[in-house]
Length: 282
Image (cartoon, rainbow, N blue to C red; front, side):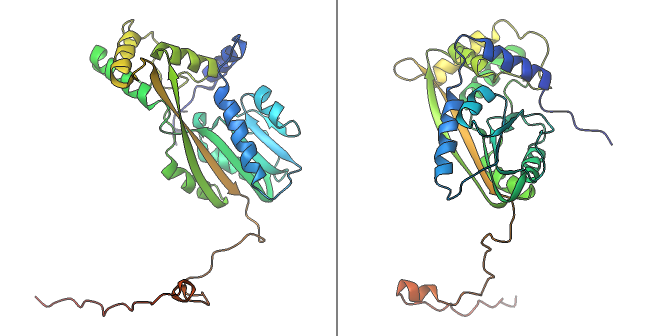
């Protein structure tokens, strides 16, 4: 059986992340915001976690925020022990996963019964303006398209993936953030500072036409520029929440098992249904 090609060139991704770390001013502000949001969500859970783990490519960021956690790299095979943790956070890496469901399954297996999983990563609306401008510029110059921005999951599909991975009480939600830049080239420089540039296995390995990025910048500015001349860039952050199954968790009631009528609770009249419409003989 032929194995499907990997989405991500892990060696290239590792190089790009290392280059981002070496910059005098890395662009990790979205990681900082994700840390704050995860911490806020944990305060809303009535639970003290004593054995947390964090999956991240940037332990220098997440390690400072969760100093008592086990920190592991976001490799295809996670270095997590089965049943060892009551909390697993997958931090800003799932959009590069070659097997997203496989990553979720590994996190679930690492959890104790009734342990909590929290995932945070970029979603499908991320860089939508850049995708459009790059595509239009490349079609205009070359007559074709090449993969330049990684595909990212849509929120409508991600709750189902949590269920496929075996999580109970799955929830997926998102938040979009609009960041403005002086120009599209400043945006691309920030993406380098995040380590979030093109690491797709299917990317073209030859240098793009010299005019591609200048044409992209023109289209981007003409299409999206704000009144002050700055250009917007959308970053959608997806949050996944799920629990390792446990008998103590609430279960949905069987249909028809309710002991009280909704109409009584609302103190309203319940309109009976009309007789069903019978099919006519033709």
